[in-house]
Image (cartoon, rainbow, N blue to C red; front, side, top):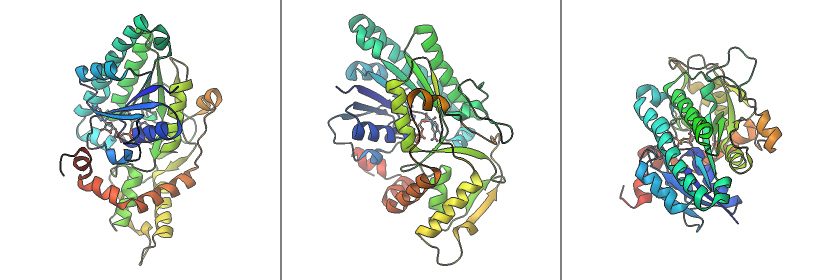
Length: 356
Ligand code: NAD
């Protein structure tokens, strides 16, 4: 018998991959709770929208009444909390929304979950014992690594650099406190950079693909030597479902792809894939690479030790960076309609029947 998963942020990049995976490859039911900010996109869920195991609720995680009602109505067995403001550059331009959703919103959701779970303890103790609150976070909470050696482990001290990572660190601390103080059966995952289909075109990889196709400059921060560890989004979705269903309460699991690349290497590889898949008539996509002023507080290197989730839960990524990036470029080339609607903002109104 499948369980009911309440997924927050299920219309976002990673959340939609989790929802698609749950519907396609499990028997679980999914309630997607999403505010539909600029980053939420219901077109990424077209393939599951009519499935009887899927429901959508447009709501803000910071709205206490709406969250209490969602728990009462859908009676979830598992919460997977992905709703967040997620773009570092936007957090530098305007931190307030990040604190509101990532910190305050998470505290509201935790309180709604705690109230629901306490009621379960009285009325349905077996369901209460099996209840899980899984908080999805980032490796950026650890700050950056100095030099080319070493990895973030689950015990690395938190040292966030940007308003985004500081707000995510704050939410992680809240979840840990609700687990330690109130006994809420919670788990946390911290993952490296994701890439893949339906990625909002403000992030590095889709931005470079779409700028390249439009013949626009490919802006690389600083000297492009910042190192990130990249994971294909569907590998992340499979890891998250494993943690939510098999992970140990109170534990943190780091998730990473064993793919450390400099930003410049990523952009150059994308240029080469574009040149192969859609050759430029004159010159090469690499000619479009332009170095721009570095982002303030830019972390130099992130690298994840994903040994714990591999040892304890038997998860490993299925895609290499090369196979995942090739799939991603092919997806963007085949889905021009999707990203054009995202870019001009026409997708949401259409899907909600509100007019463009
Ligand atoms: P995203 O920006 O693509 O999606 C966020 C989703 O949350 C959107 O659908 C948006 O509408 C929704 N949302 C925002 N504020 C909300 C609110 N107040 N109430 C309800 N819904 C709201 O983000 P993503 O890249 O899919 O990231 C999902 C989670 O994973 C985030 O918590 C992020 O910190 C974490 N994460 C992301 C990455 C990455 O590389 N993208 C890596 C590690 C961890």
